[in-house]
Length: 393
Image (cartoon, rainbow, N blue to C red):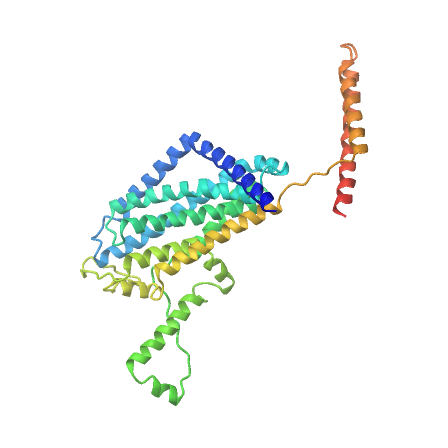
């Protein structure tokens, strides 16, 4: 048993190695697409930094709207680019993968694992390049390494989402339509409202003992913070319908934006200048990064929690891709000896009829061969269907 398991592991490693080699060759040969992606990432970072990042100093309150817009637009752009690239690649390889898996050349786990190793790191590198150029063009409080890592993580999650969608849907065209549509829904649910988080009216009825226990200001503040934390993590029906709350929690854009905002504003003190301060919204009169996060409804959110949520989404997407691809494997019916000999004799007769005709009666013979071929095709279809029913029983 140990020798057989070791042989299976060696065979799996060999198949994964061949898949990795083929994927690497495919990416290295696609120089035009790689060049376009490189120019897109650098160009988007330059445009965003020029339009949204040059209005004020990074430590002033006037830079808050620009930074929020930079982070939001950057996350949406990198998520969409990674998703569409993965969907396009998966749709182009679908027929080849189905044919090879029908022959039993490799399993769904081996194929998805090879794609995770080759495709996802490439998407992460492009997203990190975008973050590198954007960080150099703007004044961010987050360190460059952490900034690039968070943007690379959103690319990984979006690419794995593309694998899950491509493996779940029946065709590449439907995946290319459903993928961006789902990402738009994630965008609507994940983008923060610049006007701030609406405050929920406290309708709790306090008894005399409760009022006496909350007489001190410290205890009262702790009670309000606890209620605010429950409101942030349970979702507010005023901003998002309850039926859409599961989709909101599955939005990679939501977790990526919140992680970047918490990393950028947590513990930051702003320099006040009322002439250049924001004139409206939740961040109009804030004096620190913690106040800005509280106004946006992120007072109890942390970067570490967002990273854990994105890692959970990454693993979930990969598991869905493996399961969906394994369930969609094509099945073939193995013919018995009698059926196989009948099929061979019929095709042998067809070949003889197609080869033994003269030029004078070529038209008549071709019509007879066509009729015979049509009858043979219908007979084979009935034969395969009956064998399939017997095998499934």
